[in-house]
Length: 350
Image (tube, rainbow, N blue to C red):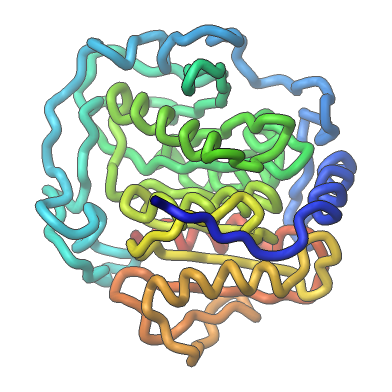
């Protein structure tokens, strides 16, 4: 039986998270606002969201069915054994050494590659154990059904919304969408009660349902699936790293902790984390406890090397291809200055 690990006092922190999100969070140097969504819990959705896939619908992404729809042949899979992402070339031409062989070009293509049905961006729903869950999907302009794209999940904070992440937070998806320049598909899921309590594993089940659909209908690189989020969204990213290291190449958590649970597992996952030293909503020590889980899982040592931007450090001795980068900055409960640039640099090395 899988067990869950939880750290830190939850109640007061979550109340403060809701109040913080209602005000709309502002990064210390990057425009990190709620955008047109207003950032307030229950506030009206801003422009840019599609009405397709109404609540209660089980229509698949772009209108095609995830079951029995046309799909391409799985090719270039990540090789037998090991992580499908192992062996690919990292940023700057450096090889990321792993434990298995990668497919052609380092990409592990999903079954949806080659599908004749073009996916659409917009809001969609999926059935998860009888519950209707919603998400916003952003497909690059000029989508090529034969090209495997990175897939990036971006989770909203407590009291926030999928629309808030999709349209605000540093230019959309925490500032990553503009930096991806058409190289990634983005997903912004909608939480229950505007959060990610993951009660009984319901939010991990939601994620698995989305992944099943995307693998069948989109051309994604299964060796390059990522997760990021701020506050409660960062907590959800930690929970994903704990439970789904065999599916996710890397996670990036901003001001997170283990409030969404942590299934015991042993698969390494690359991790980037940032936390304000004076955070009075999610205490720094709770973020450090989350970091330590991945230091242990990735077999990292305690010695660190400074990396950009300051004051970030990279831990030495981690399993090859599974670095842990940690940034403790002067500030409170807010994304680190230029976090979008830092996270994209971390993700894009894989």
